[in-house]
Image (cartoon, rainbow over all chains, first blue to last red; front, side, top):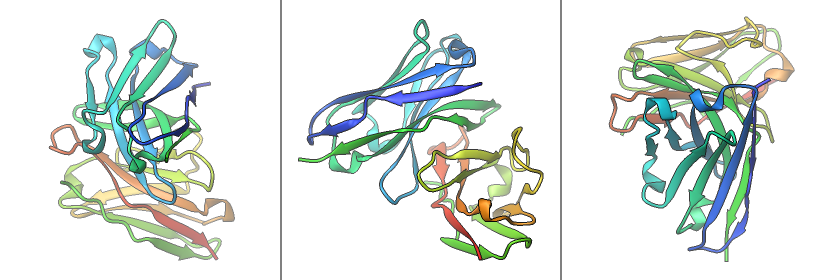
Length: 123
Length: 109
């Protein structure tokens, strides 16, 4: 069974940093593209970013609100995805979901989602 | 940037057919995906590539996409279908490749 388990959320002050982790199991993680999606309280879904598999270049792409502040990385030896969040703002408060990415030929989608981890940015 | 527009809410009685729309400029030329999110839970993929169903999703769920509107259709609506539904487009040809609709709350009367 494909499983994604996020961790690392918590309360952090504005301007602070936090690193989220996503432990993957039940599939070949090294071959998978992965993404992070967030959801602010009472709001809709917002894409944070994506990382390709190393065989596809391992490159990352980010949504405009987080570009330059957030970094996605992966450790295929540990089947783990990371989200390093720096210069956090109150508007980054959200539940952060880790997802697998499927698709090809320009069109992709989020296949499996973790249960999420909550990040609260407040003084 | 590309915008996906969903009605905030849709209501339907049990046993009837619910239709949730997702509007976007020439959305019919893109691939649309749909997610269901029940309260306090993570989203779940229910339709991908306009009309394909992942394993485990009932045949009651179907999708279509043409012109400026994509539609998620839920036949024989059940109380357990009550949830928020989001449409999604991920088009790497676009300047803003990943877009979600604002979500639609389906209420089963």
